[in-house]
Structures are given as C-alpha cells and as structure tokens.
Length: 144
Figure (tube, rainbow, N blue to C red):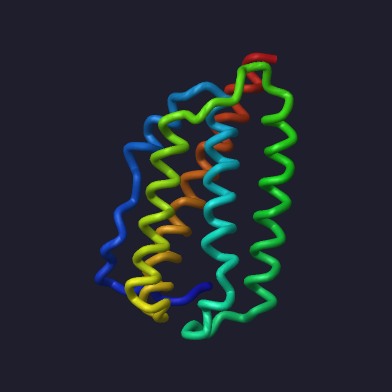
C-alpha cells in the first residue's frame, strides 16, 4: 500500500466528475463521498485476490477499518437530509469507474502491477475526496 507506483498507468481517472461534484450542493458532495468510500472499501476488501502484493495485512486492516468508520459517520449525515434519495448521475458514473477498476484487476489476474495501477487511482481519489470534504465543510459553515 505504498512505495513506487508503476509508470505505465492506463487507469482513467474521472477528473471531470470531481470538478462537477466540487460545484455541487453539500448534500450531494457528502453522498458522493459515501458512495466513493464504499466503492474503495469494496475494491480493497478483495483480500483473497491480494496474494501477489506484499502489503502488511495489518496495514490493510487498519486502512479498511478507517474507511468503514468514515463511511458510517457520513451515512449518519446523509440520513438527516430532507432531499429524497435518488440515483444521481454522479453515482452511476462513479460506480462505472470502479467497475472498470475491478475489470482491470481481473483481466491482469490481480497481479502486483495491476494492484499498483489501482492503488495509484485510489490514492488520487482519496486526495480529491479530501479536497471535496474540506470544501463541503466550508460551504456548510457558511450556511450555519
């Protein structure tokens, strides 16, 4: 879960989707964060397919525990929103993106190289999600 990343990355990152979410309402930003966290958890929870990588199992366990906690806390916020829950286009697009990441892993037979490609994308997701969370917090505080 660290170290150098493969250079010949062929994983598309949905940057335009993040740009769109960055301008969305706080409620939609939080829903997006929950959805993306859940997809990262699902992707990372495939421990039976991690035999080719040399990650410390405890580190992966702590990482997943932290993601589960964050997702759970954000879901509590989402539950308080008045707006009816419906599938938004961003949810469909992020689901499609993570489905593609899973296909890459499967196609590459869960190789260390494929996991390296995927982790680079996950790292970028987490960095962009951190920016969105900070912006959502600022927007929320301005409303209060």
